[in-house]
Amino acid sequence: MTLVINRRPANGDNVRAITFDRQGPATEVLRLAEQAPPAAPRAGQVVVRVLSRPIHPGDLVGVEGLSGVPRQRHSFPVSPGLEGMGVIEAAGEGSDALRPGQRVAFFPVPGSWSELVTVPAEFAVPVPAGVRDETAALMLVNPLTLLILMRAVEQAVAESAGGPVVQTAAGSTIGKLVSSAAKRHGLPLINLVRSDAGARALQDRFPDHPAISTADPGWRTQVREAAGHRGVPVVLDAVGGSLTRDLTSLMADGGTLIVYGMLGSGSTALESLALTPRELTVQGVSVSRWLSRTPGQRAEDVSFAASLAETDPDLFEVAGSYDLADYAAAIAHARRPGKTGTVLLASPAP
Ligand SMILES: NC(=O)c1ccc[n+]([C@@H]2O[C@H](COP(=O)([O-])OP(=O)(O)OC[C@H]3O[C@@H](n4cnc5c(N)ncnc54)[C@H](OP(=O)(O)O)[C@@H]3O)[C@@H](O)[C@H]2O)c1
Image 1 (spheres, helix red, strand yellow):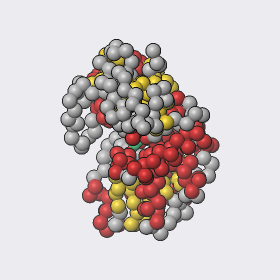
Image 2 (cartoon, rainbow, N blue to C red):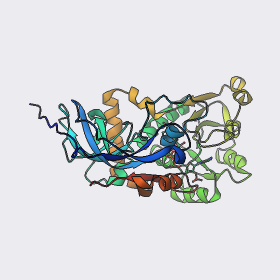
Image 3 (cartoon, rainbow, N blue to C red):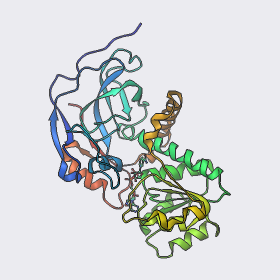
Image 4 (cartoon, rainbow, N blue to C red):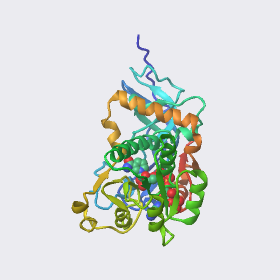
């Protein structure tokens, strides 16, 4: 028999949310607002009081827009964020495995930068007992992205003549997840970062993978040496921009450039890459594709994410945690060169 727990969330008081009314520079367009709490959850939904949520680079792209991507058509105001963790405040019919008071992580749920969100039960993941709230707030997006990236890498490596994979922005949270997965799977990996200090830190943390700084004028030669003077079959790139030309110059003919971020500046003309004579593949990868996996596959992926949070909490490093009201300082921290880990926005339960 289905137990129905269907009460209004909280006490009907307004809740805080970061919102924006138009796309533009984050610190100009975002504001702290008060909004009405969501309606009582319908069947298959829960309402979650969000305690903590990350500031992902992609969240800021959602606020600011991205060159070459049409402006998003929202019905404003909109609250950013797709991921977070909190406590179930109310559960609709059919959400049998989820109970008020239970800690859950969730993704993808638009508007996680508000204090209360309505979450489809299928996207609410119970947080394992030993996992801290701050770790749980980061438990889904990055591990799920890792799985999607590693599937793309493994396929591209399988179709190549072999050799090490190169990844850029290797000191990022995703980069460290990739380094750790490469170690587990015995995948040869060369890590690229943009500073000498970053290369030293990464080399200490992952001694199996050579870490090279693109600030060193000899970095291309160092990559060629680390790759055994062979072209690199696969590059995993979150930087793009003007770095793309250098990266493809290091690749073997027939190689694959997997692009999953645009942290860099400048641009590289597609025509300058000799894609056709060199038979290079450029492949974009996005975690939004994760939703196209079957429910069974998604359950396996989520279970991987939750167990990684239990066994390797160091891979879910928190750079700092700020109250929602301090979102401007939090965003400045999230964008600070050399920061390690992810910045969180917190909203303690009243
Ligand atoms: N495609 C997808 O579905 C998907 C999903 C999740 C994340 N991502 C992307 O993955 C990337 C990493 O995300 P994250 O959350 O792991 O990042 P993060 O932990 O915030 O770290 C950002 C990293 O990027 C480096 N960086 C910033 N600007 C750079 C530049 N211009 N050139 C070289 N390196 C630069 C920083 O290096 P320093 O240490 O030197 O400051 C830092 O190590 C982002 O591009 C993000 O958008 C994509």
